[in-house]
Image 1 (cartoon, helix red, strand yellow):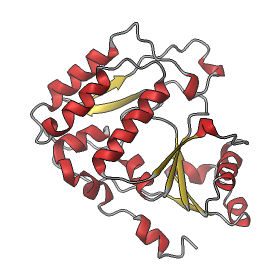
Image 2: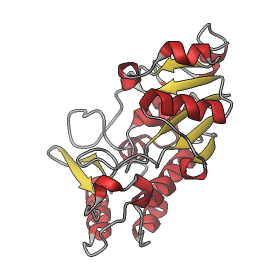
Image 3: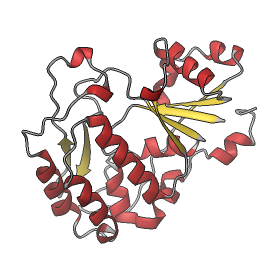
Image 4: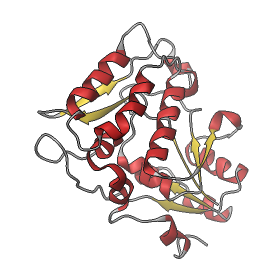
Length: 241
């Protein structure tokens, strides 16, 4: 079994979906600490002049002692209306807006209390929109132990993974020898970001997945995979034994 994991992030970028396509099982790793100014509660969409941030406000008091799963959204701020209005105004003329907008609008009509619940719900919706099939697990249902590389290795052992897909930064902390001694092959994602047709002028990379979906519709997964490694290639290569 090929495994990967990631912290719950808001409106993820294309690279996360590529990493998930490489795996049989995905773990929403919500048991780590929330980091301010990270991707847990914010991401960018394209506006008429530049990329703009959409940020979900959180109750950050005591966040140093809270995991992402415990972090609460600050619903005293009307962020849902603001986010949906920004999405609507900037994408209403996109070719596939009408195909996905009703599904996404329902998310913003729902009150969410915890950030990880919102992020995981949206991720499942986007996986379905893209046609990506993967076993989806919640880290809070397990007792993974350790830090950094040891934590990932323990997760792989408990879930009986034969290979693990690290993101591009995984090389900075992964103890490759420990994984291989345990019979688990570490694979490092190298994502080549594709260009595709966008609204509002010159192409801007690294935006939220909705930018691709609204502009390219049913071709979105094909575009995500352009020039990138696939699960089939992993299985037939020396990377995966």
